[in-house]
Image 1 (cartoon, rainbow, N blue to C red):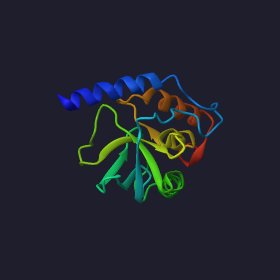
Image 2 (cartoon, rainbow, N blue to C red):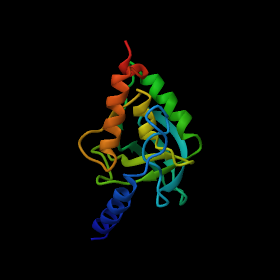
Image 3 (tube, rainbow, N blue to C red):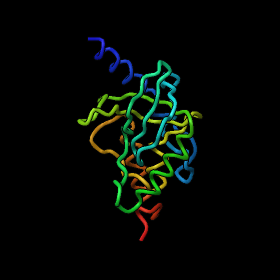
Length: 162
């Protein structure tokens, strides 16, 4: 019952944020902004373009998978670019926001990820042509899909050029 209450509360917060965006389509900060309820964690390591190891304020170590995107795997085109960009965006501290699914089948925590300044990391990666938008579910799905469509149309980033 507690999980259901948390999900309902998070859904209401996320729904209120859907109308909030910063910048314009040419701006890499376009996308959702972090709500006050997002939780700050310390970045321990960047695994790849959509996975990080983090430490909570309570000292718990978690593996976090970005909820809204999929990036190339090791050995695929754009892997290094996506991984390096996540490393640049994540810096030392990030903000995490849960959504409808809390874990992936591999046990990684699924979260929307924001910079310490509140910029959506998921949106930045998609907007820059380094990630594919997750299309199945999620509060920010429509915004991320729109950013992907724009990146494809404009031949932005290594995923969509050449």
